[in-house]
Amino acid sequence: MPTRDKLTKADLAELRRSALGTANPLGVAADLAEAAEQGRLEDPDDAGDALTLAAEIAEIRARPDAALRYAEQAVSAYPSGEDPRAGFARALRARALFRAGGRDDEAMAELTALRPLLRTQPDAPAYVSAALDAGGRSAIAEQWLSEAVDAVLNERATAAGSATSTAVDPVVDLGPPDAPGVTFFLLQQRHRVRRNLNLPHDRQDDLADRLETQLVRRAGERRDAESDLLFWPRGEFDRLVAEQPALAEVYGPDWDAHRGRLEKELVRLRDAGQAGLGVFGATVAGLTAFASRRDGDPADAAVRAGYAAEVAARPSARIPWPPERNDACWCGSGLKYKKDCLPRSRS
Image 1 (cartoon, rainbow, N blue to C red):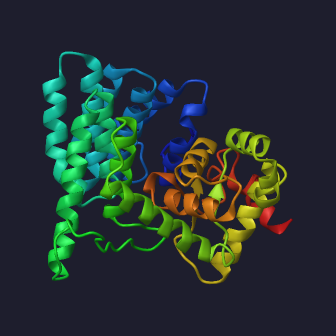
Image 2: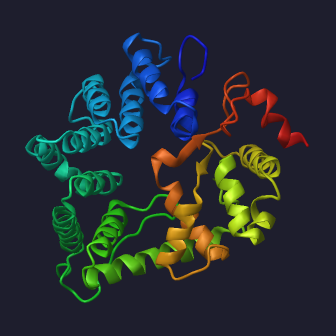
């Protein structure tokens, strides 16, 4: 945990990226909860996000009691349980209730209340279906996602004055490559759940594949114009170049070079007038899974571009840039930015 009196948004972003790799992740979760309780957040509105991160860490580390406590505190910290930001915390609460044993009805009630978000929030299909998976209710996840997909496609067809989604080839607005719309994520999560359930490929699975192909193609069209801004944390980078040696030419021969390339690209984009910059945390498992879905090679430029677009669409993957000079570096090294990646743009 950072040692300064108050935690900044940059601190929370760094902890979201690095907490599970620390020696004591559960200690980090407890510290986050304590910081929220004691008002040691630079922005008090971050209390819900800090507690949600604590709940996520505890849930991943199989501590359902702690996860439930932090998740309930997180929901209470948001202005309202209906606040869109509270959705993930409520899903974590449901997961903890499933794992606690004997509280499945409460978990299902929580997830049923979140069900309408499937049609409006891009993140909801992932966190609602993951919670149902954790409770052994993947078949319900498939039903909910299927019904949400039908509803969204029918709404769009009606608005366009065309037939409903039972048409042979419904028209779907995919959205920009760096921010696909909710329909894409609904179809993607439905496709994932159906694969895990060994269900036969249907028309909506075909649509999911087709949209993913569009995303890969459109992202690939941009790859020569700009960097994908994928950031591989140290352990992921070492694994990446070990498994895909050819990618050392793309992302750098070592981790220092990788960070230097990203820092220089971010400076270039800033100097060109772009705002709201950041990098996107990547994993080898994520790239490999994306390539597998596309029957492609992880080293292929179009596959990597598609994966980059998918990652960039996840708010949780974004690492804001630049941090303040004396704040923790964006790369998660634990050093101050001015002592680590800031000088790399000048080398």
